[in-house]
Length: 142
Image (tube, rainbow, N blue to C red):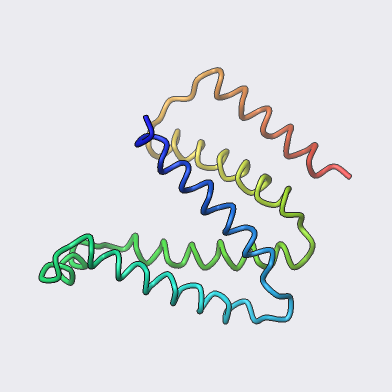
């Protein structure tokens, strides 16, 4: 049971620190300098974990198994992180920004799941979407 929820717990904890760090990035700091340091730390830790996850002889050959998705993911992560830093700088509340983005993302991914991956949507999920849309409206209503 813990194995099933471990990734979810890791995502929640990481996202919590992610948003706190994004919100706390100094206003006068260049966001790209901040992201550069972020990616250097991430690259070093990822490379060390890669070494432990493979034997040293096969470490570099594992890169041959990669495709275009790693490049697109890198570009997406830059957009994601820069977007959140900028959203917090222009005044979005930490309690609302992620909520609006994640609800919107969930709806978009649901549509992609239906249209591209031929996933099925239940009546209960459809009602959840309606409530999410109502929630976005109510959250942003002044």
